[in-house]
Image (spheres, rainbow over the protein chains, first blue to last red):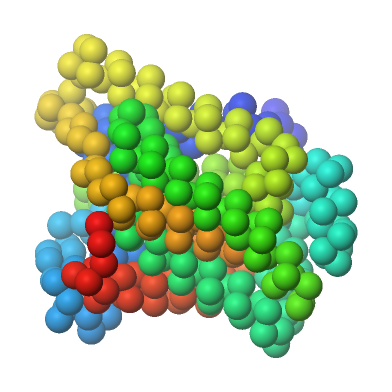
Length: 189
Length: 137
């Protein structure tokens, strides 16, 4: 039993467990699931940005969303400390070949050390990945009015056409980056 | 006190995000190269559970634990915003290998350099906030 929890979780266990966020929030709190709005609420709460109409509202009414993401940080730490959470994902052999062709060492943890290790921060390409990737995720999530949780999980659960369009956008952008741009950036590592 | 339950939902979500490996840059690249069913299986089965929950709540008029009618409203459909914003988001997702939930989770998992990515995400949100009146939606 303990081994089953600390070992890798198959997708058909972890996927439904992620989907359970939808009924948990609806039934126990009457809230629709979504993560990226917390970024807006945190900006409204702590940054001097209230001149923009987008941040000039009562963020305290959405405090729950900030508390939830604080819980995410703690939950992830618990998973790493007690559930062997930072072990290398068992990616497919074709993915291993891809990473090798990019000059990355084979997975030894959740993340490639060449990009996410603190000693990699001196590389300009790593800064492009971290700052550029973060910026695009933040800008895009708010422009699309939702991210993987709010559009892909909650929105598709509501059979929302707008969410389907957003998810199609996620994959257009993701495929373009992964196939056309990322290989070049990784070659600069 | 009502906020404590949201903290606990977050803890649960954080544990599952990490154990599902959806916070892994490796898994995101594997997904965009169609080299494993892992990510598609996760997203697909999560949506099935979510959609089934919504269906049951709607069909039987299930109320929240506090007896309220459950609010189920799709977000407004912004033809340009959803697609253009989605494409920008996708570019970032494949680059840094994390969407917003995983960005938070990776910090908890001890990947300190992801704080820089999160700072980038806040910069992106602030930029969007100021640019919003000038962008097509």
